[in-house]
Length: 301
Image 1 (cartoon, rainbow, N blue to C red):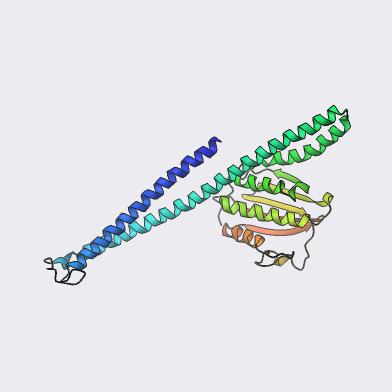
Image 2: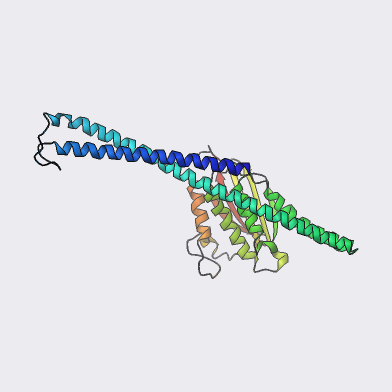
């Protein structure tokens, strides 16, 4: 909870900084408007003050006013860029905070569910049916180990979306296999981009395996670093027709008939390309493998 309190404090700090920048911009705009009105008002009767007596030799100050105006415009541009950066950072921090809150909620729910499982096991023991208790523990242990592997991911928004997909209506019937060798701390994706990549690839995998019998509902998630590249592989049991495999990342294309489709994988490709990465899909051993490769920070393009 302390991490979320720190995030709240940081957001409040950003909010005050944002308000200060807005005041500075508004004050400068007001000053420039006053300066323009002043010049035009006293420039030989031109301007809003008709018949005003022109100030002596005011025209010789016009170059100075132009310099001040240009300097002010530059100041305004710099402040606006700073404002934009703060807005973007604040949005990302809000997303991280929301992801952290979702993660806490999910783990609280899992804790409640774990206590329920203990109650069931205790009931089997009371009924003197230890073999049923052992079988129940064995099946639950598989799911428990899967969720524990998610904790190796050190990006709360990514772990939150993975747990969300694993514990959803479809995810509860799927066998997840996680191999997390890279905790993704230094993955150069914003929280929004990371959620989009993992969320869409996992949703695509879930929608594919749901059509198979339960023993074939398998999804694998692998995160590793190789030769300076973050390698994220999400695989699922299934098959893609070779004739359409080259179109799978095109906008509007989908192998499934849905009201809204053909967008998720195209968005993933757009994000990967924006970060000078690569995305590919291949089939092997009755599994479809989506591989995303993102260069580590500092690598040449």
